[in-house]
Image 1 (cartoon, rainbow, N blue to C red):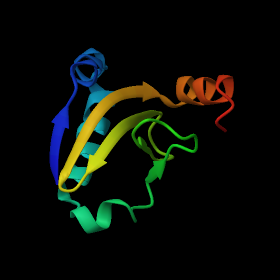
Image 2: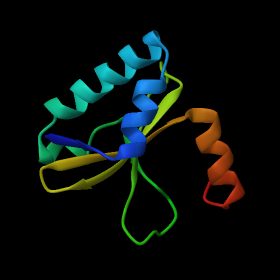
Image 3: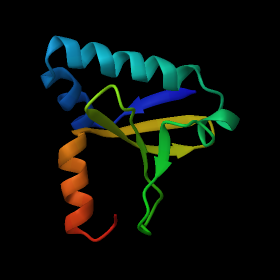
Image 4: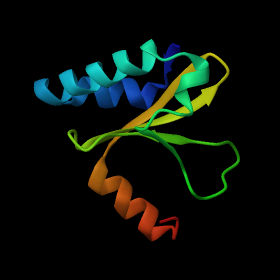
Length: 98
C-alpha cells in the first residue's frame, strides 16, 4: 500500500516523543505492508460512524494511545492526522458520532 502524508500528519509525527514516534512508525510499516484488498478487513482499521463528505478511517490498537486518521482509496492510504485516543473520543462524543 502506498502511504501519503498530509502536512498536519507530518507535523504531528515530528512532534511526538521518541517512544510514540517509534510506535507510529511500526503502525505505518504495518499499513504499508497491507494489500489494497486486505486494508478494509484489517482488525485495527475502522470507518468513522458518521456520514462525511468523504469516508475517513481510524487506525488504532489497544497497545498505543495514538490513532491515525486515514483516507483510503484504491492502492493509496493517505495519513490525514495523528491524534491522541482520548482526544478523538472527546471529539466524537461532542459531535454525537459515538
